[in-house]
Amino acid sequence: MTGPVILVVGARPNFMKIAPIHAELERRGIPQILLHTGQHYDENMSKVFFDDLGMPLPDIYLGIGSGSHAAQTAKVMVEFEKVCKEHKPSMVVVVGDVNSTVACSMVCAKEWIPCAHVEAGLRSFDREMPEEINRLIADAIADYLLTPSPDGDENLRKEGVAEERIKRVGNVMIDSLFNNLERAKESTIHSDLNIEKGNYGVLTLHRPSNVDEKEAFSRILDALEQIGNQIPLVFPLHPRTKNRAEQFGLTNRLESIPNIVLTGPAGYLDFVALMAESKLVLTDSGGLQEETTALGIPCLTLRDNTERPITVTEGTNTIVGNDTEAILKAAFNILENGGKAGRIPELWDGKTAIRIADLIDEIIR
Ligand code: UD1
Image (cartoon, rainbow, N blue to C red; front, side, top):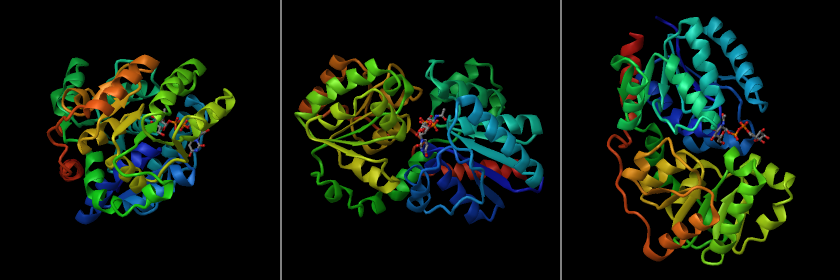
């Protein structure tokens, strides 16, 4: 096959996974196209990441934007199919579990284009999460399933996936983290937000299960009001969370949390700087569970499950759900006793993009 390799990004958590792969393919002179579906489009949800990660702007931008799951997925499929017909890629690389991931993997399956899914095999076993559906479908149809950890391999085996499709490569997001830690130290975010290094918590929320239901959102706010009395909390607001708070009439309560520092979505380097110097992270994100484990920062996951169990068994992560008392107990425990020490899982070594590029090289030859 002779066409380029297409690397797909769509939403914020994709950018830090593709950046190191793009750089490694560039270094090897492998022809590639960086394609952005436009699922995330705000400057601070998208462009800032290209700048911070040193990744060139996309070669192709589909401009899909927001919409219902069906509309968003379908629009990506229609546009991505046209791109595939025109550019005849030798293979496509998709990452993570967002709607763009599943849409492009489905196009590949029907166009007979070899497709590699990076971050394959992760399972929360919670089909109420849209991402779980995306993971199941992408892994059922992608040709090469590149996993970050042994639990991923095991999940795929249990689903009957043939051994030759499973390739454990490690965690590529940790490549970006390690590549950029030094640069993140130059961030001025602490002085910009007037917070003291080492003496604050970081909070992120955007899952439908936490922010699309007023009761759940309120339970979390109850906990934050008490944690804020003990330690300042920095809360970069995802657009979805900001919209929901307004819709539920919770904005005033949010702004009145003691010692809360509300900001818009943070750029990559600023956010790494915020995490790295924090006392604890409270989140419902998937990626942050992994980044805090790699940084050795205690993490409380405000969900009932995780598709990244290795961050609990080996790392610094604790699953607490969104019950007020459970969050408070776990947070105060960290503030008093320092939280789990943890260790960095095998193959989260900053060299995953090299292993992925080796595989891509082998596949397209
Ligand atoms: C998506 C991913 C989720 C990922 C998250 C990270 C899916 C199913 N979900 O969720 O897995 O963890 O990204 O952020 O793919 N919006 C803007 N500007 C933007 C993007 C979104 O204002 O640039 C607003 C819109 O009102 C939109 C809402 O945020 O309707 C939700 O965006 P969407 O892409 O549908 O899902 P996320 O919640 O961001």
